[in-house]
Length: 451
Image (cartoon, rainbow, N blue to C red; front, side, top):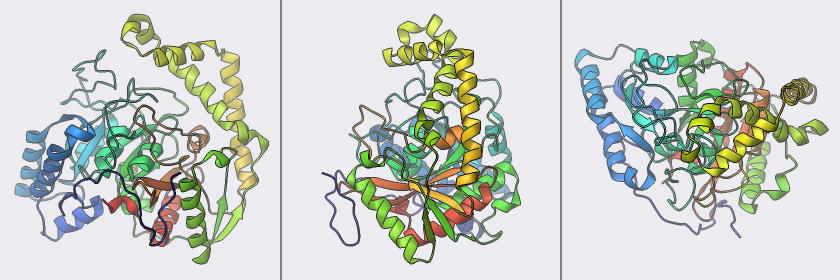
């Protein structure tokens, strides 16, 4: 039975990965400060990332395309002309479901979309270029870009899963191959990979970043967000891509006083290691002076995962209809079964699920009166075997309800695998949530820097 690492308890660790160089280990914010002070160059930072990719990608398989020469040349140009913006020369990964005009975008289906070349960048990529980021390449996606195991592996133990579908984005960031990557989430595809791999994942409020030029799953659920290694990096990313100064790490202090605690119906199924880390985290937060309030969620919340799945299956069956029609022989049986399930849902079923989600959103405000955020577990436990992608049962409610949520890597199992907690905020109050997350990061620590 796996137990959590707590205090000075000696961990029974699995395989140990090599430590990164100091340059590769920098967070985005640390690198920007080093660039501003002239302590590093953009080229040296990019080269450190590329060297780490060369060292580790054969095992981790976090990248399906690396544009090494283009990245080096871009960084050299930044160094030559001087930095014109905060993010000039910052290395960046892009999930391979997001269109890039100068790199293949195979959408997690290389057999169907091999060497697919979009004519234009997705808006989020165009924004990244305009901000000066140095694009390193495209991050690996799970099979069919859904909850099926793909080639990517967990950087802490390559016999384990990195989850789905932003698997490569999380693995690349957690393994110090790049400080930040852009991912997407429909159920749990940002927070679950981040938790399993030991990074920070942030799912913003729906539509805060345009979901355009990206493989579509479900219009009411699809969200774009960053994976990185510090809350400060999330704040900088969101300020840049949304243009809202309230995201700035220097704008305002957290006023976190009361946290709502939710242990959903699946809480008893969580592994002892996850339960131990969660309870230890609550204890530390309580000792710090934050009031903890157990939430009594409405009965409708016990079926919230089922509501989300109806919407996602219905939409995916329609989004993937041509793939099923023309490329069934290239599709996994699990995908076909899921699409067939989605086909069984009628327009009436879909409308009822959307209505149920609206009811849950209103109920959240009733239950959450007087609290600043919700804290709850992120996953059922440590990353399981690579033959599965694990469960997103604790994450998917917030994809349905559109609340911003963030995963924080706060512990390790005795196998040395990351464990995290999840913090949830209120609709369109993303800057507040991130300020609260920064305060909690200070109290609980951040395990994303540990090898």
